[in-house]
Length: 280
Image (cartoon, rainbow, N blue to C red; front, top):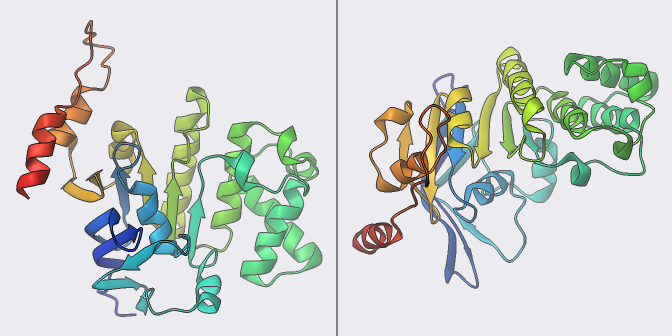
């Protein structure tokens, strides 16, 4: 890979269903080289579809097309499933939003993290267990020896998300996609988990794509924010105060402000947005 080449370079990505009739993602461009990119938007805007398209994890009913879809010098659109399995987890990692549905309920925490060390680092037996324990300690889990013997239902949501982060980052992937990593967590632990994820990604020199509904949270943790509406990126921002598109400004206006409370929050002007979509 050329030193000047971005880690991720996607041009005109389209994801369609129903034989190309329904466009879930409609011609977006993403370039990422060692930074942190946030993707925000309402439910159904296409955020998670983008992340899964990059990982090539969409169902067979999805048609994925792009003028360019490069990761670390490799053409993701041309790779077969066997080659993709070598990339997933080792060079590209996906952190899901709810550990209750991502962790195996019949395996202990220690066994699952050790399995990740075995699959992606080639370690076995005690070496895999030791690597897993060390990674759990890195995500600030207290009393690792006790936690490794527990099952997913015996730990809290915040601890479960730390375990997921440990599993996904143990191989030091070049790209980490975090899809709503804090939405299932209590407000009191969200910032702590995000700060942990951010520090580990920085330490390992990975690129991060953070997908979320929370535009302020994403802006605080990312270098750039891509705002999605109806499958398209309507604008990219380094600073929220520079938002120019009516959709982005509408999202910001709809957020509660404790310092300036109002009787009724603003709502999006759907008629104006429809006009903009029709005229594009």
